[in-house]
Image 1 (tube, rainbow, N blue to C red):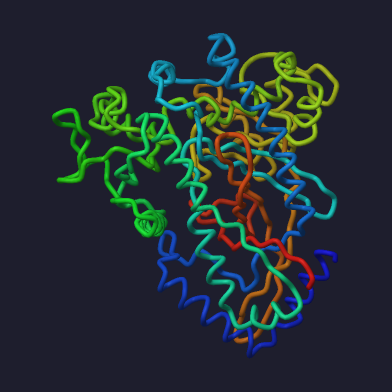
Image 2: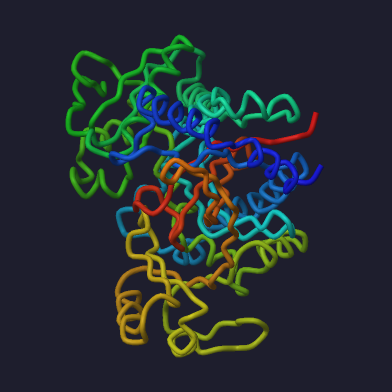
Length: 450
């Protein structure tokens, strides 16, 4: 079975009447389930994202190899202050990463953002979200919605579609960390921690409902409403023993300082927090620069170096230095200034597309100013990646229309070691980011012909 054939069959089923019924149900279900992000529906198209089993296994195998390289970089950073400096940690972050969280993994739950050219087997990993990976619950809920659409009733007669659920893996990662931290199997009392006003709040509700359905006490807590008293972290009368941290550590410190109740409770060992402070090392976008920099080649074996070369786009910290690019030695700053159409600038620790400058979309003056900013703050420069696209159907003025959407592929990672599930995002702009308002999400399925 070819993927193209499977997609074409789905599109062929979408008569205007069937599409209209499916669109109405998609909108109603998203409203009912709270699948709204920043006031807009998460999914705006009528087809899920499909992968063949071979493509999914390819992603899993390549992720496994790249994750070994990331882990080696992390281990080296923990042992060597010189290597750790390459990640661009701030002074307070340098202090916090030495805190032992009470469990092994620096990022029990994480996500990598990639572009996957499915018809040619190409894969380019552009970011590693090792701190607060969003959307596993959204993806699970969108899959349930997609299964119920009228068009799927017809499609399932000829094709088997398998969802890639991830909420269970998030839960197990949290429980495993808590068990290591506590030294026993007693059930944790979970708080999903983030600001009340964030657009992803609806996903916290999905997670809280899921945790409760599995027999765990769970609340959603705003960091401004928790207290640390008598050796316990509490929200009202709820004693928190496990934090599912969705708030960024940098925001927590910026708003509450190192003396914030959550910070003190974690540092005192009074509560287990996932992901812990040590996640900041690999979460820095400079982690890709550490893998890409030829000076660090000795950290990796030949198989890992080949995977890095194949799948990590050329990435360096923005600084005055010489570097190797496509086999030649270059003076980094003049080179990226003169060839802006080939590069993107990214702040070392931001999210939602903040601070990203696409060289091919700005003029020379703006690009030069962006480079100057990047010299004052930790930034990386990354080679431009070809963004794949697929046609997705939608209803326009009562009729089905197919429009190309740029597509990214975001494997969900657990214990820093394996992939289990995948988020897919679509956009008509080069910056594929739901938080930035330029993207939407779709359910991801593995498809096979019956």
